[in-house]
Image (cartoon, rainbow, N blue to C red):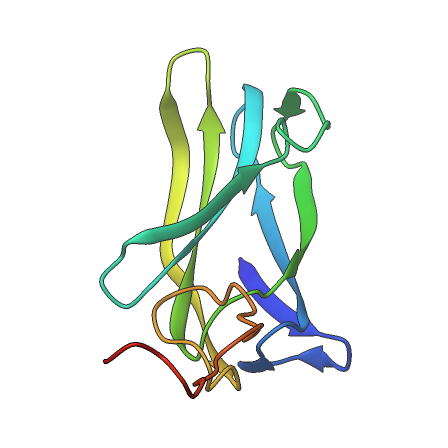
Length: 139
């Protein structure tokens, strides 16, 4: 199960620059060693714009046994431009580079705001200078 939430609970629309929590829940049927939970954000073309995992965030390898439930929540700062995005989630084993399980487009969310940017991310553009001066030697 994959869910997304804002500060007030489950949500599908977020303002650019706000925070979002992604929760992945999985139940083990058999023992799985060296598990990492991977969270990926993709655009409407399934182009990956962000990717992280529990191991890169300092958790280390996980072992999920039969009938155990794994619940992992990651908080993200949405520095995304306006648009539609999807969450892919994986239970991955890096030693063999194989996915135990995959949820593609497990959750969809929309980002509003950021009208000053187009594309996938907002780099928070700030106009520092734009001027026209008189007295130039021909233009």
